[in-house]
Length: 113
Length: 114
Image (cartoon, rainbow over all chains, first blue to last red):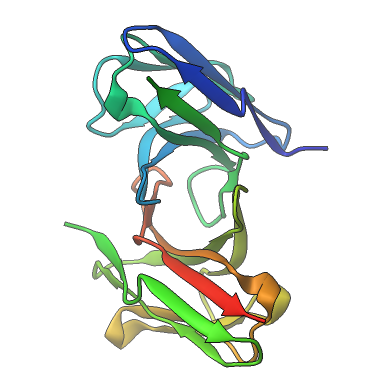
């Protein structure tokens, strides 16, 4: 009964490759997010979708492209991976953007070699 | 710029010691405040939250936090820590009308010695 699930949990890939991370939530939330946690464990938002519409796009390279086929799914596609993309990527969801908390997935540890 | 600052990078305590982790944010308007915990290798879990009302909020596992608006602070406390509290603790702020994004502090690593 996982609320926010991400796949894969671990991803090791070479520089220059293209990869995707998938996220699904079964909480009925209408807002989903991608956060990046760097090697110092600092968490920063990348994107947010509300009802399949992009509402937050922080200063993230164009190589990162989120896609939300429906409000229960938010995938992250990364082109031309670079060493600096190595991080843990967390998907999260919340009910609307108001007075609610976010629920996080278990994270995807991406290692670019 | 809006930011969240956690005072301690790494805290080491013995079991049964009391804990207080500091958190300050820089924003003068309406905010929601959160503390999340990340156990080793796991995802973030909500410890407690403040939206409005009583500034002293109680969370899971005996944690509590106090919102002091005049000080822009939301410090986390626990009277007696356990070895199982060893984890990374994150303070986060959600600013009204900014799309629901959380602004996180840099985290505090808590190590509890048995």
